[in-house]
Image 1 (tube, one colour):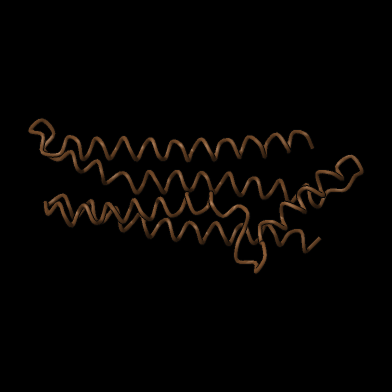
Image 2: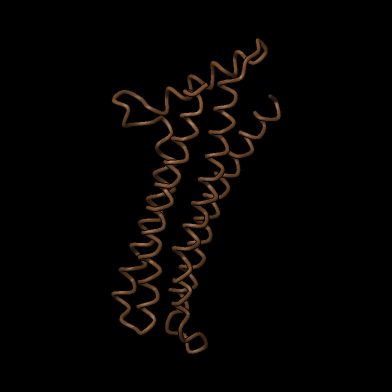
Length: 174
């Protein structure tokens, strides 16, 4: 069980690292695309902004993967038996209960999910606004990437929710 607990901690650290990288990569791509805009050396450098929504969605997917990994391990620990693991099982049951607080619409863990998804949606939206304001031929591609970023964020979040629900249902079958 110690290896599983270590895996949970490792997954959580990896998710936080990925969220930091998301901020760094988006900032770097934005600074490059906007900072060199109009440069004769790089006439269409704003096309680098095209990559931003896809970088966001890619990192979101990796974070969702780590979150699902944590849920799988937690679900396994909750259903395992043995006196040595009693405290860990009790903790996992408590952690499960704080995922749905009060009226069941809020969770103690909402803020990370909000930061992850809303940042991607907001950045994709900003990309669309920039492309409308930019009014160049490259704006169509940039706007399309923003729209794709929004759609992919929504689709992948729903896919994550379905998988998480299936994992939680495993405990009810046993």
